[in-house]
Every structure is written in C-alpha cells, then in structure tokens.
Length: 289
Image (cartoon, rainbow, N blue to C red; front, side, top):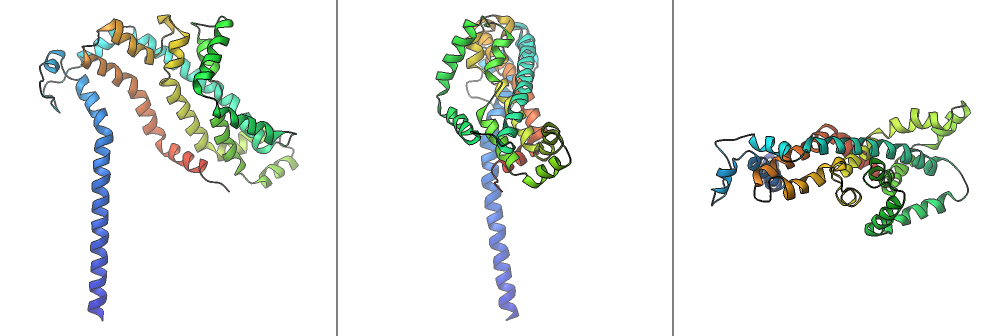
C-alpha cells in the first residue's frame, strides 16, 4: 500500500514538473517573440550606417556599437524641442484631465441628484461615436476659435475621457456607503471626503489612469498632425515623420531607430516603475462588490 502511495505521489510530482516546464517554455518563447522587436530596434540604432547597409544577411549582434546615430537624431531636426513640447503637452493634458474626471466620477458614484443615471448613460453612449467624427468636430471648433498652432488647441480636446470617468466611477462605487455616511455625520465636506478617503483607497486605479493618459498623450499623432503645421509645436510623434521626410531621409534606418529608442525610453521606464500599480488598478477595475 505504501509503495502504491509513493508511486502515485512520484507520478503526480512528475506530471506537475512536466506541466511547469512546458508552461515556462511557452512563456519564454512568447517573451522572445514580444521583446524581439525592441531588441532589434536598439541593436539597429547601435549599428554604423555603412555596416548596416553592407549586411546582405541581417546580423543579430554587432561587435562595433556606436552612439553616432543618437547624435544624428538630435542634430538632423530639433528633436530636443519636440521632446520638450511633448513633455509640456503630456503633463498639462494629464493634470487637467484628472481635475475633470475625478470630481465627475465622484459625482456619478456618490452624490444623489435627479437624472444621475440618465446623464451617466448618455456619457457612456458617447463612447459609441466614431473617433473620426470627434476629430472633425474638434478640428472645426479649434480652427474657428483661432487656436491652431497653440498648446491650448493641442490640449483642450483631450482634457476629458468617458472611459476613465467610467473606470474611476466603478472603483469609487466599491467603497462602502457607510464610510460616506459616517463622514457626513462628522461634518466632513464632500471634497475633503474625496481627497482623504476615496482617492487614497483607489490610488492604484488613479495611478493607472494617469499612466495610461501619459502614454496616450506621448503617442498622440493624428490630432497634433492636424492642428499644427508649425515646427515650434511639433510633438515627438510628428518629429519622427519630420526626421523621415526632412531630416536624414528614408534610407538612414539606424538613425531613425535611434530616434525611436529615445522617444520610447520614457514610456518604458514609466511602465517599469508603476507596473505593479497598473496591474493592481486594472484588477480593481474588473472587480465589482
């Protein structure tokens, strides 16, 4: 009997080890598939222009890395200015968005007023409108206001988001009503309750929304391309196109990759810093009750 038990335990352990090994093999393969484009981008940016063009068969390593391409990326076009414009646009847009969506989410989740559910349903229905229609409407409005080629024109259409309001509203709704009623009994104002109780409890979601908005602004291309034709207001996404067209042309791929690495690095660092908060915030967003 003992031999049968030991044999059964060994078989179970072997099966578990095989499943674990297969899982890690699959995950490793998938990680390589996902990360390979980033590796190839960095590798290409470190190759000399001449050696890159002489490669009839692409090489997966280089014995003579160079940073000359990074210098070229900043000298061919005013990439540093585009970088600073993007930082200003991203920080201002994200800050204004938080000022708008946090009180809105609080109102929809906690305050009682006539027509609240109808207004929230109307808000959600706005998500059904195609993005192209919104872009056209915003373009006409900003042009009529004379805000083309200004930071105001770049920022204003992006200071709110129905999806982020919905996400925060769902998280705020998970906080027990008893906390709110107890705070009201103590004479706590709504804004004080919002900043002292609700935001700290839902901090992972707030951080997630902030990081997602930063990424969205940093990668914004269509709207800045429409509303600006002055280089003084170009963002890095437009800067890549400017490098391709008026910088070092379409043939200097290593320099193009260097510019892409410089532009992508802040987002990668940001995600690595806040990855745990992002995962926690997304998990909270998918939990009800």
